[in-house]
Image (cartoon, rainbow, N blue to C red; front, side, top):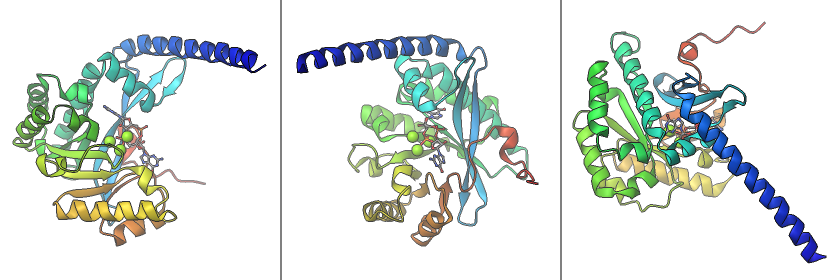
Length: 278
Ligand code: C2E
Ligand code: MG
Ligand code: MG
Ligand code: MG
C-alpha cells in the first residue's frame, strides 16, 4: 500500500511540478511584454522621521497582469532577475526615479525628499551601470544626493571588489547606498566597514514580533547600536503599530517605513490628503 501511495504521490507531485513549470513559462513570456505594454508601474511608500514627517519615498515595482491582476514583486522580480529582464525593467525604474527627483528639485516643498530604488545584482553588475545611471541623473537634472540605491547582502557578496568600485564611483557623485533586508542574508559583517554604505534597513521580519519576541528585540536593539556606532542611518521596515514605533524611537531608531505611516501608493496619491470617511 505504501508503494501505491508513494506512486500516487509521485504522480501528483509530478503533475503539480509540471503545472508550475508551465505557469512559470507563461508568466515569463508575459513579463517580456509587460514593460512595452505599460503593465508595470511604480508605487511609492513614504519613509518618515521620529516626528512622523516624510523624509523620502521608496519606489516599489507593480505589475498589473491583464488576466491575473496584480502579480507580487516577490514572484516576478526573481523571474526578471533569472531572465535578465531586470536590466531593462531596472533601467526604467531608475529613469522614473531620476525624473521624479528632477521634478522635486524644482519644488520648495519636495526638494529635500529622497527617492530609494531597489537594485538587483544582475543590474548592478552590468558593465555600463555607472554610465547609464550618470546619464539618467544628468538628463533629468536629478540631485544625486537624493538618490538612494538599496542593495542586499547577497548582492554585496557576489563580486566584492568590483561591487565596491562601482559603489565608490557612484558615491563620489553623491549617490547614497542602503543595505536592504538587513539580518536576512548570510554574509559576514565585515562588508559594513569595507563598503560605502549610508543606511541600514532592518528587515520587517524582525520588527513584526518585536514586542513579544525577546530574540527579535535583542537583534533589533543590537542592530541599531551597530548602525549608530558605524555612522549609518538606521531605518526600520514594516512598522505597523504605534507600539512598534514607540519601542523603536525609545531604542534610538529614528527612521521608519511601514503601513502605520502609509502603504505603497501611486505617485498621485502619495501626498493627497487622507480620504474623508463619512
Ligand atoms: P523591499 O525592498 O524590502 O520592500 C519592502 C516591502 O515591504 C514592500 O513589499 C512593501 O510593500 C512591504 N511593506 C512596507 N511596509 C510594510 C508593512 O508595514 N507591513 C508589511 N507586511 N509589509 C510592508 P513589495 O512592494 O511587495 O516588494 C517586495 C520586494 O520586491 C521588495 O522588498 C524588493 O526586494 C523587491 N522589489 C520591489 N520593487 C523592486 C524594483 O524596482 N527592483 C528590484 N530589483 N526589486 C524590487
Ligand atoms: Mg527595498
Ligand atoms: Mg526590505
Ligand atoms: Mg525584500
